[in-house]
Image (cartoon, rainbow, N blue to C red):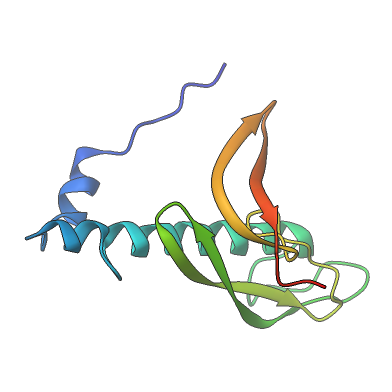
Length: 128
């Protein structure tokens, strides 16, 4: 079993540099919201790189010539409120993000199952 590394204290200290009150941590645009957004968007970018088989601005190596095609916004609802993230798109329209699936709008937690990461989510109630 691979031992997971903890978050270094130096990183936590750097994140808390301007901390003055609880709202700085948990409030709108607080440290927790910013960190969650950056992590989700970084995971989505990694998923896209894996899907396409090449880095952003890298040489296209897939047989279809599929490439990135900007992003679209998606609002995820979770236990700490709403979070708007940028979901990457591909020209072929075949990218199905696992970190923030298209048909889901609620993201409560991540669970691990034999190395696979799944989002526990609930279907959007806006569909007819």
